[in-house]
Length: 205
Ligand SMILES: O=C(O)c1ccccc1NCC(=O)[C@H](O)[C@H](O)COP(=O)(O)O
Image (cartoon, rainbow, N blue to C red; front, side, top):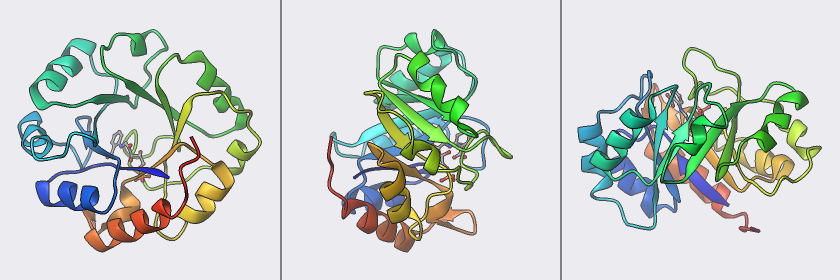
């Protein structure tokens, strides 16, 4: 299974996650306790291997501001975690991950409206637009028809529930932030544990 670790704020954590098998790292530029400056993101990204996806997380940000940060830092992917429309997602020259809040089966219907590379399914917003450590009902996905899009499962995942989540939802990639933290900071032992469990599952697509 492919894994994205979100909310990276220092080089040590980023390099550790990559060493343990992370495929993608997320850097939050939106309002959040994990907000990072473009300068620090650039410093971290410069030390990461090429194969790792470097994802910038934005909420309702202007495309020109996003592209300025992309060019400044070396981000390879843009994650739009706000109320961006399908048209808003077409303004970028690099791959886009559109995050959708899932509460009911009706929300899954929005997936096909977006013509972007990846769809990230998360819980409805909490204090911040994402990264709240809350899961949604994965069973909704078990009943959902394959759309051909790359689905990233997020929201309240942890080393304890990742196997159950993968079994039920069968996503393309899983994404975690709060579940690999202790007292609000990334916890290397939890990152290792999460990656070990997720990586036991074969990549099928
Ligand atoms: O992580 C944040 O603080 C954040 C803030 C605002 C918008 C998005 C944010 N995170 C996006 C992510 O991709 C998170 O990994 C995803 O929401 C899951 O988070 P969690 O439930 O804490 O594992």
